[in-house]
Image 1 (cartoon, rainbow, N blue to C red):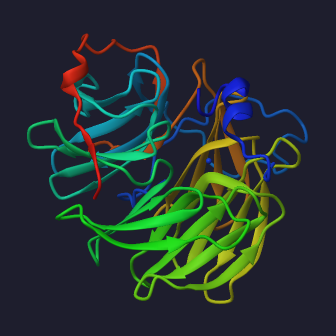
Image 2 (image 1 turned 90 degrees about the vertical axis):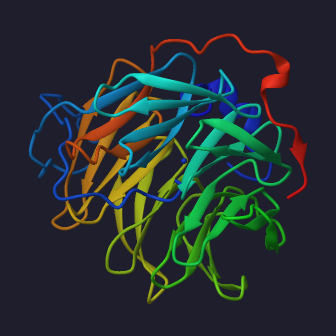
Length: 350
């Protein structure tokens, strides 16, 4: 729906414009399938310099999975399903779903903070707050609806809503500030650098990345890229920011040096990135594409790409803290039980 369906792309792409989320900073070297899959000549541009490793773990929901957030402490993974209006809770050891939590309509991104999961709902332009100790929705907040990012150092949750970014307290869910987008901007994707206390935002209406000071919530700069990006943004090591253009014409991964606020590398990737994951320790960035059902690995240290084709449309990406394997969310799983309309939380102001 969100990333594998051309129909949905046409519905949600703004007229003014033409893939988070806080990335998982993973353990040691990552294992990913890059198997014996040939890459068509010219499609990714670079000869593979990444070892062919084991098959990624798949977590399957029943409808249209979108994003994933992982709690290493509990060994649980939280996956949104935009068709089922549900947050699936998986046990990573078994790979099975252990809970199904009702959300708002068309949930997309999910982030974790303490015993809370925050889910953005596209259609409702809201955030569902979930108690992960009970797997029950606590409330629905009438802000956001697009990308989410958490700064664990400050306890701030950032929620994109197109024309604005809402800043909330992760403990109380209270609205702290509202950041207005620049004129003509349409903010969708967010990523936080907690060390520098910087917020990076994609502008799907313009080919640029917006940079905000987390202390003042002020816009302090912007970085020009070759094409607009959507949700494909992630923070890497050594002051690097990775952004994937959301286009089918010469799609690229841009590497931005945060200190100089300049693009320092461009790498061809598959079209319409659904999810971007940076593994700073391995020096690899992974990008899933719903259009050609693939995951591309980009070696940011020595260059080169490699790709694996999947039978199902991939959504979010994560790292299994138990096995260090790449996780891909796909359709094909068990459906959640039927629920009553009253099972969801009421939408309120934050």
